[in-house]
Image 1: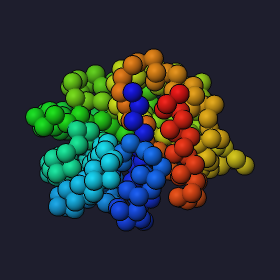
Image 2: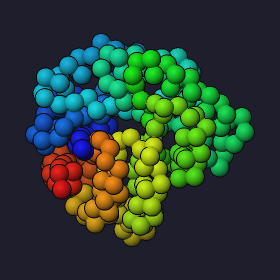
Image 3: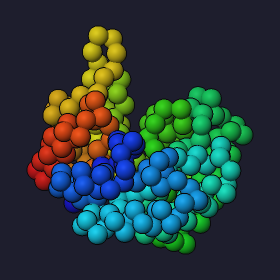
Length: 254
């Protein structure tokens, strides 16, 4: 089963109640709340209020999209984001795997990140929380080999990774990467960026439908429940978001 959602960082400038309204209007299942804006570490009362408002609207709190970087940030920040998870009653915590890309972070830098992730996962396990890394450049999950290596290095049952397409790769290459990382894949960040005039630009999800149909074929092969979370829309436009959400719902229900 696929749950559809929105990550709140898509509309960082909007108040939380407007984001809830948009997600409800779009008939999505839930929201991933971002830790760099609406649910900042240390502000557990705000996080609890936002989570309660989310559920009152009939939506799930799909995850806490934190910007905690184990191995680079103070361990105390890890405790704070776990407090946010408890306040929001969510069982999914997204983090970033350090501040260095895999080619830079060898030796002590990589070990420090791995050790911090292990500590976080141990603490999260006592709360029933899964820790999942962002699949992103300038972290240890900036490519498939390093991501798979990290999954083995941390080696915790509650350690996973998000996945999103690499914007400069073809749909074929991205689909192969998704298939390889699928046993460790938690939620999926969904967007469509296209190459135009030598630059990468945001486009509608419909424009990327062929690629996303391919990715959905891979995801369906695993028979595992996952959230498909919209991230970034063209022009930061709520109307474009509503159209993208309709496309996402069609993909998820196909």
